[in-house]
Image 1 (cartoon, helix red, strand yellow):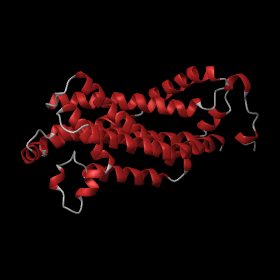
Image 2 (cartoon, rainbow, N blue to C red):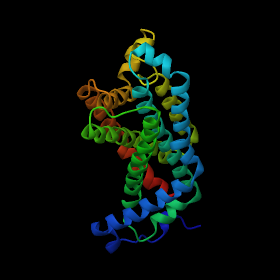
Image 3 (tube, rainbow, N blue to C red):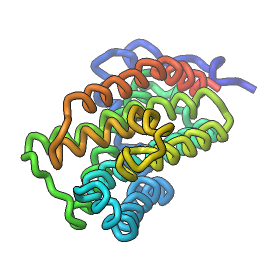
Image 4 (cartoon, rainbow, N blue to C red):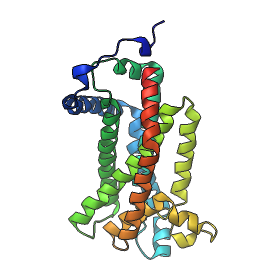
Length: 270
């Protein structure tokens, strides 16, 4: 049987940089349409987080607000937004694994398209999905009482925090999805993201955790992102948490970008 590696590779004009932009946009649209029509992705990105936000506000909102002397929504809305970002990335990783197993990546590899367009399209599609989910979940938060007290520029910056955080997390799960055929690794990342939610400053204030857990909760990436978004909406420290979020996110991109590219190319040629 002829493998993808043995097929004639189309190069030349298709590898020109001027083809990269249009071809990336076409593949980005394909991914966004597929995700929109995939009920699992929609539920994990929007349905579950929106329901979680309503439940947290109904069950724990008053108690957390009384304990923290501020509305619990300014912690729970950012936290649930990040949960939606991570859940959507995990659903996208599962979809990527299915495309690899079905041979779709291999078929795309031998088409006359720029080799970089496939992975770039996934990055662009992730950014669009994250931004759309962020807007929807913050709309739900506004309906519950969340407000942008720091003005429009801060609100725009606030929307950028989940995008940056999400791209870092998406790079990690993409590397996991394409570099190994074991779905258990993606499931382990899902479990880890759930633990991050419960051990973050968005779930309850830092002082509510045991003393041994406070350093872990305070310095994990989700807590930094939540604190940055809280400061950009309600007020408070912004610079320190924002710089830490940038460091965590850019660090994840730098560390996992090369494995993601190598694994994607390997999966495409399998």
